Length: 375
Image 1 (cartoon, rainbow, N blue to C red):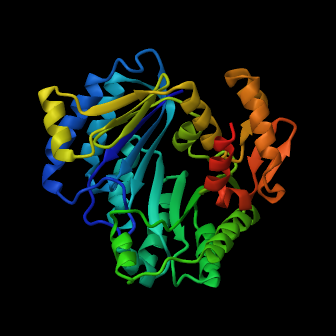
Image 2 (cartoon, rainbow, N blue to C red):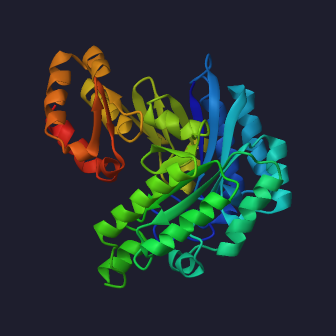
């Protein structure tokens, strides 16, 4: 079943590493919400005969919106789309926005999954990352969410930060697994062009963490997840059995989804589209009935590349027989030959099933690029 993504492009300030589209102009929130609801209504024919399985509020900082505005958006979606009675409805939230009152109100409007952006349990690292909460506050907000009845809680952590020792990272993971969470996302600190961190690197104010430390910390995430009963089901994600992010999993298995809001992407019937990444322009275009998105139809080659790239992100991996069925024996033969040249330490290859080991996941970009070059 398809899903819906809603991009809330507002933050109080920009984190040092973030390259997602967001702005710090809360004065635009009322006009944005009006345009957002108009977009939701105008695209209602997209999935008119299908049931929506997930709704995901991402950003930006969705929890910057008051609950009434979030509830209005959910109501607008329910008005125009057939939403499954047990749909997963996720809201990304920052600890500084989380209060008991806010959480209880979210429950009342139907939000049933939280993705909390903690990033670190170390106050000095939080300051460096320009986060607005403390470690103590982060821990307390997760506990409060559970006390308010949320039984599906995910948290984010970042590793690969210069100054974050392996010992300290181990402690971070230990802290995470003591909390009432069902899902853990761990991301290696990336240095993306246009971010403040990228500028710091150019100015020699920050030296990126070395690859060996990043690998060690990634493998720690993999090992400690298993030790605590979590399944490492995607490169950056682990969960208790049965608690995968249904919404994000739809990206990796190429299920359809529609995205609302500036910079949001959609995938429908082998066509990918993306909205303009500018709040003011988005509001104006939606209001005036003008085009605010760009789209492309995927070729067979594009689809094959996606099947391999997205499939190998997950523990499920890919099936060679499926590639032969969808894309022909020539492609499956070339892929089999390319797989035979891979480092055995990086792969699990049994029968027609290929997946990556933990070490392979860490270098998955290189593996995937090499496979695609040879098919």
